[in-house]
Image 1 (cartoon, rainbow, N blue to C red):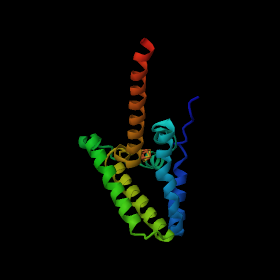
Image 2 (tube, helix red, strand yellow):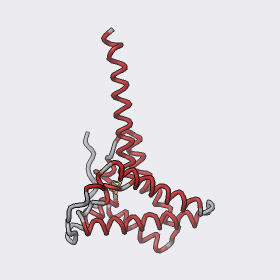
Image 3 (cartoon, rainbow, N blue to C red):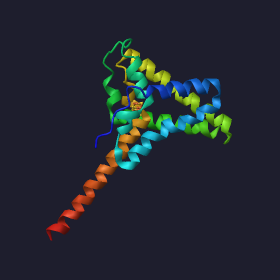
Image 4 (cartoon, rainbow, N blue to C red):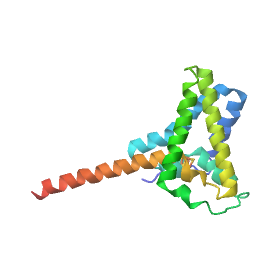
Length: 170
Ligand code: SF4
């Protein structure tokens, strides 16, 4: 059964997240859900379903930037695996560094998460205005990580079939 897309309205969660976090930084902790869900879906074997059907950030970029986006072609290099890997490593390093500096305090963790989510959101909006609305999704670390998990699962499945085939033939 194909799962229904919620991309038409899931942007509400991103607005809710930003509003609550501005009201009280502690709500920033909810950002872990946003970061973790694509990975959980991928680990469950659903590939990039989060990007296609649920993601509040992708939904917001697609919905609100459509009218104001200049829709220029994005630079080619951002689609290369090298660049996506670079972005994944860079953003995870920045994230880990800021988490390390929270000293494990919940308030600081929540604020660091809120800051990380907001800065990447602003970057996504700028990219969406200059290029196409969801250009951020090309380099999004969570989207890329989900893709890598899927690739890894596919490769392992292929290897398992290859190992199975000679046994069956024998
Ligand atoms: S690539 Fe990132 S921002 Fe885009 S839909 Fe996927 S998880 Fe969301």
